[in-house]
Image (cartoon, rainbow, N blue to C red; front, side, top):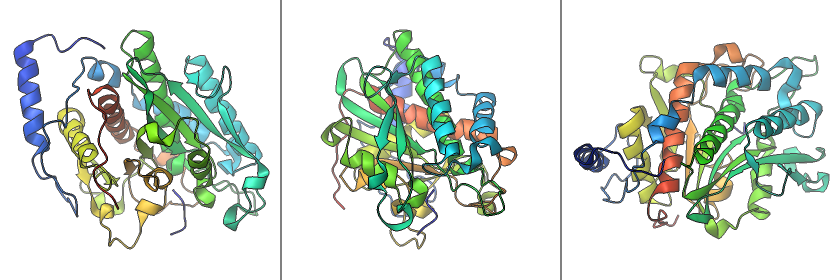
Length: 363
């Protein structure tokens, strides 16, 4: 996070009816720590309970997340500073992972990089940085391929200090990076097995978040898919640690933005959590009056400002935030797995429901 500021339905009809009834009932319930969130019910909240979601979610495993994070957040990546050697190494690692796992590129055959020229880094903290690249994986939808859900995370971090100490950025945002990688792999697996999403999903790894959300701004100004066709952005930025304020109840996630532009998105998020994951969803930082202003401080904002509904998944800050001690040995991998599954189930529902979620709130 930026430092500043299966095609068949459930086979048992009675079971399916009960599940749908329960989830719609629960969607009407008020969530814990709701802040300024409106929790009115909506019968369309879970219109696409598609068989196969749990079958594929099981492939999100703590050990796989750990394996990749120990590489992405290793000293060899030199802190992944935008435009420098370590960031380029991380980009190649992600690209090669996609090639090896048959995740399609979003731009052209064999082209996973959206190149950002040096000239674009012309102001503020980004001024003078070398050229960089966003990384894009893609799963095309079977029925509404022109409609796109974006699942994003930034893969850059802040590099090294003058003494050569590496800011590994394991939580920020190595955790989100490897979660997006695994989700891309699993949605591709589902597609290859005949259970792909109805809508397309773009897996977007953005660069230069740490210097002002520059990579996501570049994508929003040069979108590979029209912004008008972008259904929602699910942005993952720091999901591997525990906020000190949550040490006694660590089975949680902070959500920011889910109700800002689409009440329907908020209801979908609440419903799939209750049905599949059962994390405590905390909306503390969703409050307009929260002084941290996290809603404006990660890459989802470059979608939200264009009227695209967003959810920001966040574990809160901790004692190692933006320090050389943000290392992969401190990550809570089982909890990270559970949080990743929440994003997966939300993306699955958004991609498979009968109707595209509606934007019905203007900021």
